Image 1 (cartoon, rainbow, N blue to C red):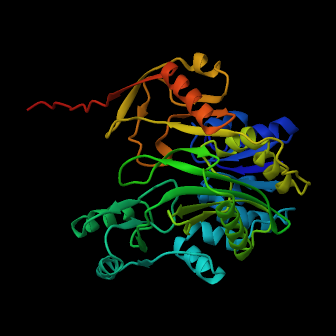
Image 2 (cartoon, rainbow, N blue to C red):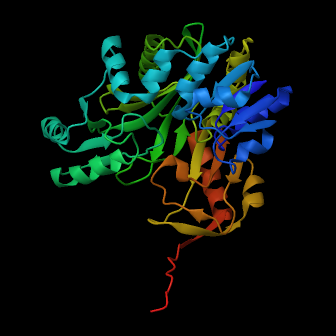
Image 3 (spheres, helix red, strand yellow):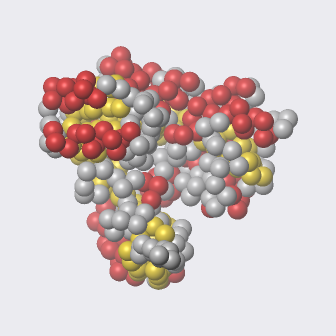
Length: 407
């Protein structure tokens, strides 16, 4: 019996892999409308952050494996439950801490001798303001304990700092600390690794397709990133060193990296889990490495193979509303035609016509994906363009209604 923390579209591949193997699953998610729950044998309507609540809801049942994927929110619970039930794979506390506390990860980076950057964390707004001026504008403001671009802002001038701090505070514990960080110009990369017995068993490096604007929202990935072999090896070596520093000797992790024009780099954040945004699907079709299957095997205490069997290119394109405010998805067309194109791996729209959609200012507000592959990035880009021509999503602004009361 495998307990899976979260049931969004990003966790769906884990449910499908468990079902393929005939493993009963318990899905944990407070929301009943999550798409992966249709593939769970049992549903626990409990927060994935509440490990004691999950234990109570299990009512004496003992899972044989616990898995968290594509979200940092359940990592401490993964650590707590895997140790409580003495499971074959026990998620390390160091990995959970580095993923959910950005200041803790900054300290890991410094101790490991990996390039980092300037930052300040605290609750005192005056001290945060002084730190921003000391670092020099532009700066980045964010909560220390979120992912998926929640609460993040680029602040180019001092006048924008109070609003950015207020915005970040909406996504963390009331009165909790906030981060002000140096803004680094350069190419935005994801270094995705899967550790195996203390070494990097597999690595894939992509360039993020960052949506223009102040929120650093990821609109997709293109892989492999166009970098030379020496830079690639330095990035993989740094990722392996950081994994070992957070006690992650087995399992997935991904690192946000800024690569400068001179080949130097800085590591921004760590997520000791599978990437979201259909990233494992892209890796499987680019390299023939199934990191979802490897994660399930790891959780069960079974061997897993990370040997690449191909070497291709691919693109993830996130589907989302182009509106700056709340809207309505009015129509969806061309899905079947886009799926039929050679090279289209995935074309999924998770929202139905009539659904309310939020502006794409965080990863959770996507409505679907296009994933395409090709022999090289140019071929993948051509397939993506053809699929986008066929896929038609209609959006309209949400109309606020007012209630007239008798005078």
